[in-house]
Amino acid sequence: MRCFKTIAGLRTYLRSYLEQEGQQKKIGLVPTMGALHRGHGSLIQRAALETDLVVVSIFVNPLQFGPQEDFSQYPRSFEQDCQLASDWGATVVFAPTAEEMGGLTEKSLVIPPSSLLNCLCGAYRPGHFPGVATIVSQLFQIVQPTVAYFGEKDAQQLAIIRRLVKDLNFPVVIQGCPIVREASGLALSSRNQYLSETEQGDAANIYRSLQMASQVFQQGKRERDALLTSVQKQLALTPNLQLQYLDLVDPTSLQSLDRITEAGLLAIAVYAGKTRLIDNLLLRNRQAIIAIDGPAGAGKSTVTRRVADALGFIYLDTGAMYRAIAWLVLQAGLNPQEEAAIAELVSQAQIELISRPAPQLTGVKVNGLDISDAIRTPEVTALVSAIAAQAAVREVLVKTQQTYGKQGGLVAEGRDIGTNVFPDAEVKIFLTASVLERARRRLADFHHQGQTEIDLQELVQEIAQRDQLDSSRNLAPLKKAEDAIEIQTDHLTIKEVITQILTVTREKTQEA
Image (tube, rainbow, N blue to C red; front, top):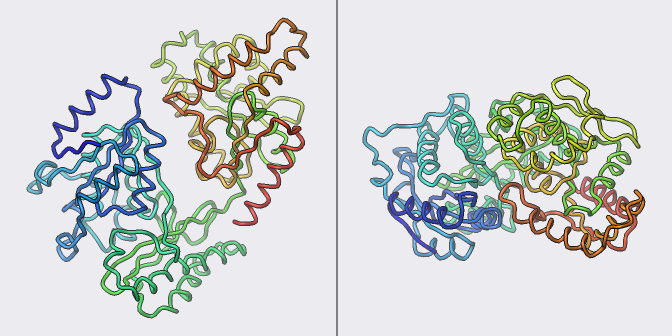
């Protein structure tokens, strides 16, 4: 692992890496203030799985500390941090000084919208988030990452950074990662080392208090007062904890909610002794999302539709969406290699799925025009793979798919549905089968169509090559989500696969 303390050194290293390895390589960024713990480790490990090179920044940012806050006492353990970062999969540590980052005198600041600043932590730490936004913006410019990873414990920070990226058009994906907790439930934080043993025990009640609200929510209560009261009652059992704020807000806008309709963030800040701790819990008012990933030829499309029918859920036919864009490209007479023109086209297109009873395939409208049958022509079929591989097309359609997911109650399949499109899906299935079994199934399909000249070994080779291509793609590669349940289908009928998925769904939704 390399360590750089200057912008020039880091930029030169990254430029050389991309020149040698290819410009399509993904760079992951994990911004930290050091004092690394397992929470940071989860971010670094995820970045190492999802990108080709991981940069961990270690910078105790003076801009985000108020006059009476703990900047000088903030824990610093640089040598240990470097070793941990390396162990977790980091390629580079970037540890600049304040002077290297432009100093503090008359520094240009990035000021997020006031609606995101004047609430939750921002109401008590007025200069904090402009300081965060400024340094994070600098890191984006210096590192130019493909993906940046942030913990969901700092929910207000995450919402502000997502807004920052949107408003300033930073070409980076912001990946929020789940809170990592002690066995007691206490959210991991660098400041936990300030706590005495007694305070650690007291602080565990913060998460228990949030869990009480979750229980109330699961009983069907969606109103603000009921949820906040349940937290306050549990928290009162530990009088040594001093509540600074407790609020129910929209996860994106951070505006207070009277009632949860889609999703609500319960956010809390508490003092345990002199140590300020934050935590949160996301409550979703939606039906389950079932995400089915897996390699080509594993039977995902057939199974997905039948599972949706069995549950009365929407079948999100992502393939029909990509076919619709391919049809649109054909109609516009565009060369499939003209990615800029296609990006312009797809960014202005309106895609709408039309649910149709089986055995009819999913219908689709483009800009209000029903093209359900037109997207199934050989010309569209021949073009769709090249169109689906384009980043701009995938970006637009992923946003459309996520819009369908707001209310839940849908089943979707693909090679990255559970890892990229719906990473928060309640049920994730990785449906797979051996290469030989998938080749046999495809051969049977060809024979059923009267094509008897196809050779099994050719199909085996073709499917193995497709697996290699899909797994090594820079854009949305095939991989199993960490929390996905794998179903190996070699010796299972379609009915048996569906039964397994329905069983998993019942178990998962009952747990929730």
